[in-house]
Length: 119
Picture 1 (cartoon, helix red, strand yellow):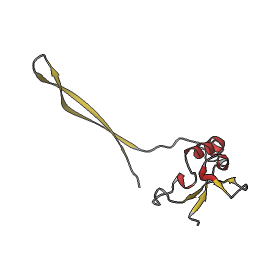
Picture 2: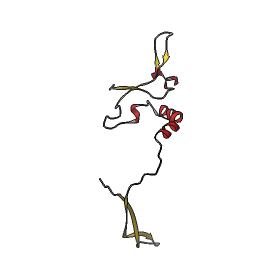
Picture 3: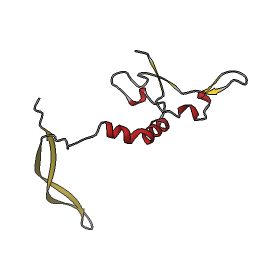
């Protein structure tokens, strides 16, 4: 596998920036950007291995997003089993009564969601 990819935006070569200019004299061209694979860390697959910047990524998605969504369509919802826990605890608010602060008790409820891993 190569250490470089070309930007996947089909119109990357039309964007006028100094980094895309190639050639000498009157034989100059705008060229698609060459991207070093893993330039932001090689620890995981990354979208930035295929696009040189946000502009090219979103231009690509505007052009091919519907086609990609249709290719990898979702026919039914996905579900993850969870456990919802509600924890009640006694807490206090501080209130200023004109010359001093007083503690006003109240009961707070914290809701947490935990995934149930069946692996």
